[in-house]
Amino acid sequence: MFLPLKDINPTERTPVITISLIAINVLVYIYQMSLGYGFNSLVASLGSTPYEITRMTDLVGRYGPYLVHYPGPKPVFLTLFTSMFLHGSFLHLGGNMLYLWIFGNNIEDILGPTKFIIFYFLCGLIAHALHIASDPSSIVPTVGASGAIAGVLGAYLIAYPRARVLTLMFLFYFIRLTVVPASLIIIFWFVIQLISGFASCGGLQDGGVAWFAHIGGFIGGIILIYAMAGRTINRLRHGGGNYYGSR
Image (cartoon, rainbow, N blue to C red; front, side, top):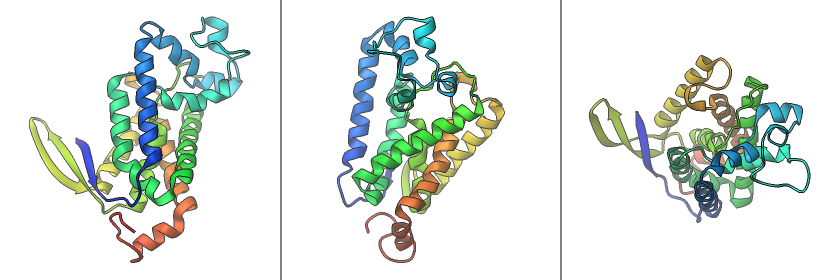
């Protein structure tokens, strides 16, 4: 098992969007925790539920009380975006933000702030699409930035496969701090998502993990990085700059 800590891959600009996304996610989670028993109500209100999306039906308004009150019917479609800023636990938040910080700054460096925020949300929407397609009748709300961050990982694999990452490696009771290629960590992560996703046979498995959202976001990130920064990637690969980061 790998726990990445830091990539050895310098950037040329301050990752304003990456930092802002992390700050917003942390602040939202602090707000979630402050609600006490209202935590689950917020998730039900602002999480993305496949059944609601496919039928444009408000389950919360019909069957349960609101925590968040709207001037009209619940904006079901907007939950595709609001759900990206909610997390189910501290570990869920921490893992997502760690991966976003390690890999997001370099993708933002390639795309620039405006394109990166578009890329991020598009990856999140693609992640939602595959998750919903895998289980359109699910009434379990989906929350987390994992789908969008999976897109960041897919883009990083394409742009910087030979970049090095400082990593904690766990093998039973053996723990070692080592440097490994980013491609090894990312491919290992994606294989786990594939195995778990197809083993779940419905999009959700133990712990309520939306495996197909991760798969969709990852594939979306690969496609989008080529579409949005294909020339930059070709330049990196063919000697137009430092393949490990600086250009």
